[in-house]
Image 1 (cartoon, rainbow, N blue to C red):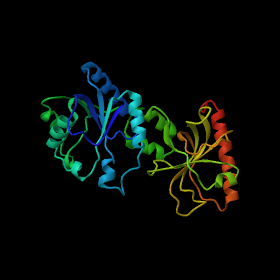
Image 2 (cartoon, rainbow, N blue to C red):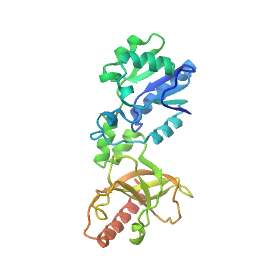
Image 3 (cartoon, helix red, strand yellow):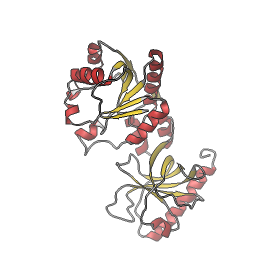
Image 4 (cartoon, helix red, strand yellow):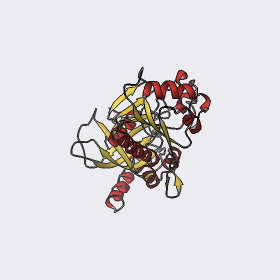
Length: 308
């Protein structure tokens, strides 16, 4: 997969393209990627995706922007798994945001991307002040064709990034998996921590987070990227209120029956079941008692048929 960080000066070959933020790459996004691949094969064009960094809402209103569901790296890994040949990642800055709809179509899509076929959602908006829509795109489509995709539903509800965030906030991991078509996961590199978990009898793999997470609490998890294959365990995702009054979000994972050094290893943590919300305890002894309860409940979950 060829990744363009920024836009090329000019197109080197025509492509079939879809455009979007693709936060979470949920089942609606997956349907778009599958349709893109199908059309690209029919037209003998490489399938390409345009996504944005940062998310436009992070650019316009960073204080109120929703938490990301997936990092850029995770999105690129999922695009690759779907068979996408090219990804264009223009930096969403003031200059890009100021492009008129006509400039976006003529200067970006046609001249710099080389689009011959484009797929967008039926609510797609683009250009300065979001002035362009699907009608604008079709009006300017002199050298390419346009296809719109309608809403994808799951269990009677619209599949969207907002719906995924709402389910994560509610701790409804089954609903999250239904919307995503897979368990929700966070990937990162294991770093050194304060070794507090080891003092309490539960050594943890600590994974620093670059962005504010879309969920918090204590979870039964499955971890990939480890020696010997995936392992189950318990994860704490939050600000550790018992330990510090002003903590930054941290992902800490206690792996069952595992005690090998994995510092620097990149792992993926799948959140399968929420055990409880994060809480503040009067002292570390009380916290250790609660951790033992969490571990027992997580082991019970994995021992059950639903957790197998």
